[in-house]
Length: 279
Image (cartoon, one colour):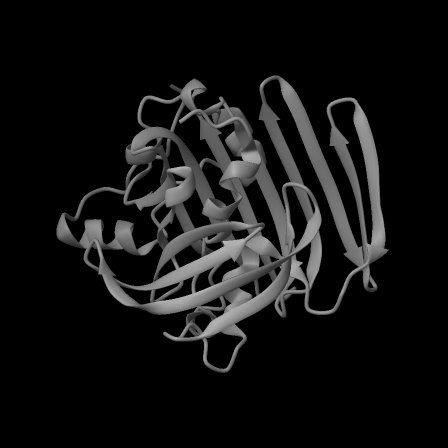
């Protein structure tokens, strides 16, 4: 399946999740909450990779999300990145979005102050502005897990969550729904199976007890992502934009701050896996 838009991957990245708030309270001094590499699959074929990191600044009481996706020519040769920051109550602070696909560049720089939402959108040669009030309760879509965990029931089987979130790739405010269908074993990990509907796209996520995404699947689009235990399993033989990754993340993520990496390390103790490099 040829993918011709970064927008296609929004449902997949939406559940690139971090740890639960309960666990966060126990490790508030930690800087990196979650860091991992995921495969991007189209029709079962490995067509790219995603790097995801969540941080929490205990002093500022802010969450940050950093994301990069790179796909092969088979999947449209897409390069997409996001840096986003929210308060600990999920009120948006700012985010930057960049995508390069088919030689076309799109950027969004957004800020949220005093209940106002302002952004500059550059799509090729076209420039537009967003300047409007931010409705109460609206959050950035990639922080959905935290918004769900604010519910007294947390992520609980049988619970439905209706919400409004900002779709970072176009800046729109969209209604969404997440339904926790049940608990399943996914690749040896106890996980929640969550049915999602966002931007008229349905997809299923498998999330660990700590809120980490194990996989996300959109059968209609034949798209999926799978978290892996080490970076090389995701990056494969794909071109890795090391300089860009260092600029975006501040370093090259190792990708070992997740349940799969921990399980792999416990099974076969060894030196820490090397970060992805130029290929």
